[in-house]
Length: 261
Image (cartoon, rainbow, N blue to C red; front, side, top):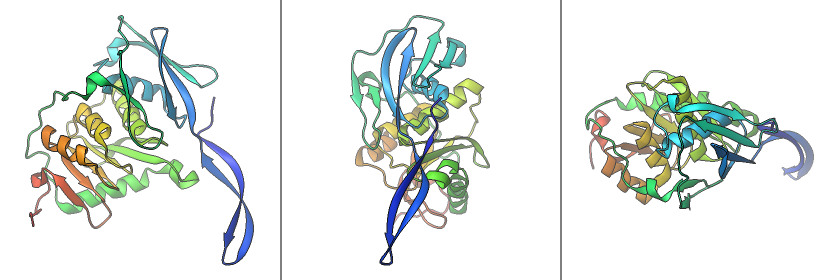
């Protein structure tokens, strides 16, 4: 097994003085995904919740729809490959596109087409203070971050509490891990809100749509394409969220008292 963190030793210069520091850093490791005995791709990821990441990736790529399709999902002895066996044969997508950002992942070109989702444009609806509370829940879930830094965290909330959380060096991996936890536990709350520390790019927006989350909140910025996709899917996209402020980039009607300038 591979540890998600590694001990390091470094020199720090501060206030005109040097000191030697012992600390922990986040691990980035290659982990392969094998489906029905065929190697499909290699993730660059933090080695925690790897079975969930593999299953969630297949769900987000629309390869599987339900846990009943998964006969087995098992991490190999050395921790560098996840074997997923399905109850049916599947064909590996012929073309993959590398996604953006740190530890960028892969998505099948076919999945770049519109995700088939339909959201109620007025539900769920929250006061601005509730958005701040959701961001606070995100902060409280950052266990690895508090130990090592350098890692993204995402949480799935039902509007009141955190249902699942995930951490990884790749922000997109956190949403695959959350999807996998939903599928493997057969838990899909009626209200789904995703909150992430990572920048919202098009693949993050696509994964949120696939999970059926009408609200996506980030600590940082959305890309231009993610804003366009949020409008297309009917997702409320919120960025630069802090405890007492945030920006709403699309479908602001779900946030009560929000007024356009």
